[in-house]
Length: 141
Picture 1 (cartoon, rainbow, N blue to C red):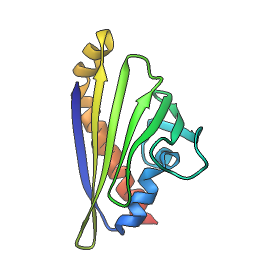
Picture 2: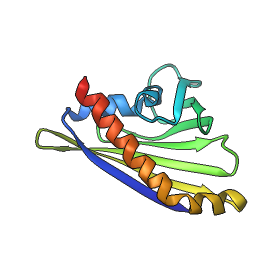
Picture 3: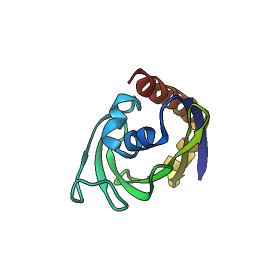
Picture 4: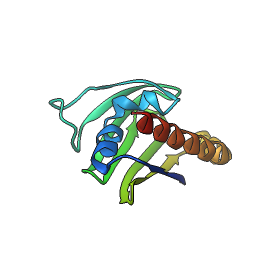
C-alpha cells in the first residue's frame, strides 16, 4: 500500500468547504483527472453508502465510507480493477478559514501494485496540484 497527502489553507468556512468536497460531483472543477461524476445510489442526500459513478483518467465508482460534517469525508474507489484507492478529506477550522487535507491510500496488487509504487512521486505531486486547484476554486467563490 502507498499513501500520500497534501494540505492547504482555504479562506472559507468549514461548512462551505465540507459541503463542496463531500459532493464528488464537484471534483471535476478542481481534480483535473475527473471529467464527470453522478450519484448512482441513495435518495439524493449525501451520506455513508452514497455511491458516485466517476468518469475520467481512471473511471469507476466512489462510495462515501465516512461522513462527519463538517470535518471529514472518506471515499473508497471501486470497479477500478486491481487498484483500490481510499481517500480522506479533512477540514480543520483555523483562524480565517480551514486547513484542508486530502490523504490517499492506494492498495494495488500485481503489476498495478508495482506501477503504483513507481508512480508515487508523480501521484503525490498531482495531489498537491489538485489541492491547490481546490483552494483557487473555493476562494474565487
